[in-house]
Image 1 (cartoon, rainbow, N blue to C red):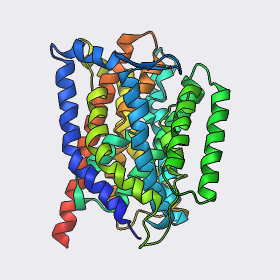
Image 2: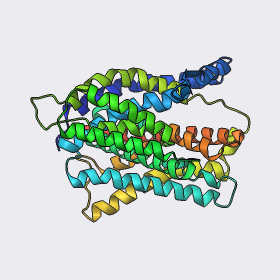
Image 3: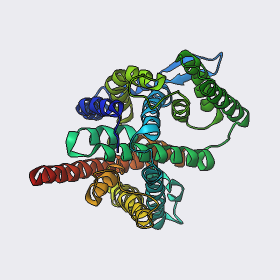
Image 4: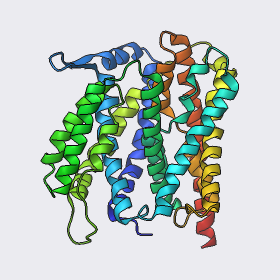
Amino acid sequence: MLITEYFKKFLHSSQSSGILLILCVLLSLFIANSSLGVSFQNVLDTHIGTEIFHLNYPLSIWINDGLMAIFFLLVGLEIKREIVEGELSSFKSASLPIIAAIGGMVVPALIYYFFNHGTEYANGWAIPMATDIAFSLAIISMLGKRAPLSLKIFLAALAIVDDLGAIMVIAIFYTDQLHWEYLGLSAAVVVLLILLNFFKFKKHIYYIIPGLFLWYFMHHSGIHATIAGVLLAFTIPTNTSTTEISPLEKLEQKLHLPVNFLIMPIFALANTNITFKDGMVDGLFSNFGYGIIFGLIFGKIIGINLFSWIFIKLKISSLPDKSSWSQMLGAGLLAGIGFTMSIFIGLLSFKGHPEIQDEAKFAILVASAISGFAGFSLLKYIGKKKEILQ
């Protein structure tokens, strides 16, 4: 299958920023557990904005809902590009990430439910469903040529679908109230963006300005605002020409550096801010800890590969180009990096119970670290083995 040059550039940038991302994770953990921890948390809790338009939020919200919407915009642009002319341009290849993502949500939730049904922790069933797209893509990109580009595209598409699924779960099960008037306004903006595309408006400004309104309305609707980035991306015009650069490609080129070397490191610094407390380790060896850890590590790899195997055997889907089942196992492990979205669901699940929230954060951190290290090691080993055979 054709892999677009733009996706190669995106992955190259992600590979270069992967080490920086990991350093930011370690730095954030160090700061959180040092004398600077309280001051750093106070910075993240500092409100920025104005009350006039109801846009006065803590810095952490601006990072997770604002900056990450830009990250989702970039990944959405790349996914659309691959759907139009690349690895996801056929039904068989495009359907696999969707099927795999569904399996990767259902099985982890069932594992968690098995350990925690009927307990005070039952409400956290959705915690292991999520895949952290920023960290999973950064780690697989660090493998360079030892992981097929098609596998990286598969993981990116899977993570997008997974996060959209997690957002829908939050909206349905964990949102106190949906504001339908804002959802209606969001839908109207999406229709406008589609019309702009239909009538071949090509300047970015015609899409960026409505996109800002889309983010605002989505944020106030009660649904996680990062979905606005994906919706906006899928309305940006593109083409199949190899000589004419489309508006989508131009925007993608402009977003590479700020996303990979500014937005993602800031995201890592803000979201790995976990303070270790007494009793956290004990919490890992409880049904609550088992549900999260087994759900993310084993639930993801089983769900993704089982659902993929079934649909490939039925000839509905096909494996990513030049990929093997052993590499699919590695991708399944990387999908077990739940992190930010999992932590977010954990916070929503146990409002008013900070001690349970801390236990959930620690279990998610441990599971994500194990999944990331295991997935990276497995894919690196397979890549080395293939190099030797060649």
